[in-house]
Image (cartoon, rainbow, N blue to C red; front, side, top):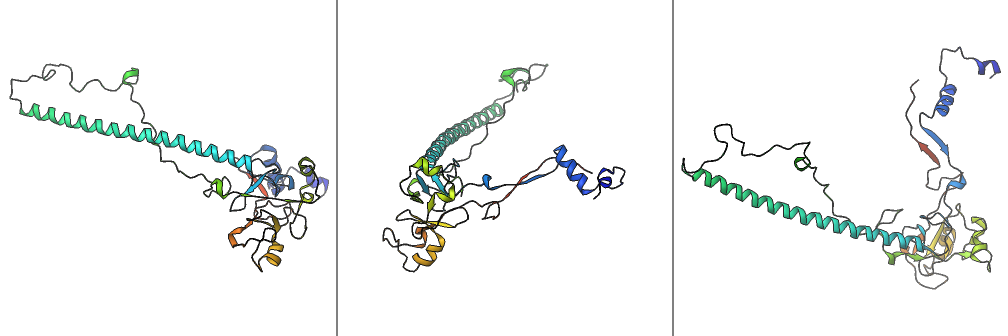
Length: 284
């Protein structure tokens, strides 16, 4: 398009290019940004702290956590459940007492009505029956007197769930289900600080074949030994005998835990690569 066409402002049509440019400048409309490689968690990072794991553990669903982070999370959730359970029990006991009190008041009211009906005329006088006396029903609720202001009922609590759930999968999780993970360093002899300072693709290798591990490489954790191997080596070497080559223990399908990984900027790998934020729409 020529410069004259870009500077033309006398057109009768509000073009798509102009609408898109005005939307970005004004902040209205849905904003979409494609996330890059730095916005996706590496395969050896904790799902809670998003930092490389020093003492990693994995759940049966394949989510990797730092042991300290997931244990702290489980303890916090258990304490929260205990507090919510006590509050629910207190409210349930209070509601039970209120129901008993209401039943007692109803029985007393029925007794008073029976006695008033059985009392002969002339022997029982009630104030306010004829000559403009005060009403026996009492004062009406008032919004200006604090003692007579109607109060809103307390929110009814639901019984909390007793089990703690995984923050990523949402399934029930116990501390005994966590499996220790042992990555094989690409270069033995490095300190933990030197190892974490390297690129994620240069930190660890497959425990069987020595292939480098990364987000683009599907991996699995063997439950008996905790070793991390590639899925290619699992299909080619392990599933024939179904034995852990490092510990010699027999394996089942549940003992091969597929490690959840993030995608790169070019492959989805089961994650969303587009950040989307909805804003008020500007009508043309």
